[in-house]
Length: 138
Length: 91
Image (cartoon, rainbow over all chains, first blue to last red; front, side):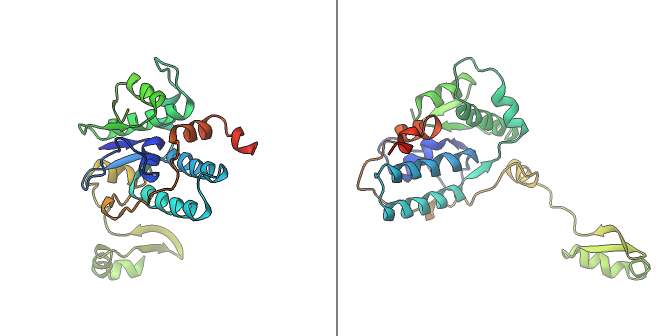
């Protein structure tokens, strides 16, 4: 199974060059519900900056909605908060900690199933690596 | 309740087909008769049943992504929405 952060989702939606998470039938792709907020805020930002016109914004919002509906999304519940608030061995941003903690909860639940943590953000990758997750995409 | 006792077999058959039957004692609901919960077949279905995962369609073959005219700097975009959206507010 694969966990994707906002950078991995946006690379697919914005069709950015570089390695992207393989979306393979039969393999689950998961994330935190946090990714819904992050990615839609990013689309809005690009519209406000003039990088996306009205038509492109409407299309990208639709594509993002479609993609997010395909993911399994975990809520930010007590288990996630407990892990996210615990100490990391590196400096970690709050939202990065929530993604890492969510992935850790899913690993614990999916006993025996390996998880790849997909991100294209170096700081997010460091946070995930610091907790022993297998990171791809950087 | 007397109706249930008199026709228990009929109500059990209905419940086994998916019906949910409210058992009342003097018009007061006291029990619910229904089909057994399906055993979780996987960890993600179990989490979904506990309200701890929203299962997606995973229908990748139906995903269509269009090309953009301009390149989007995703890293800058995410840094901004995660840390400081003020650059957008100033515009």
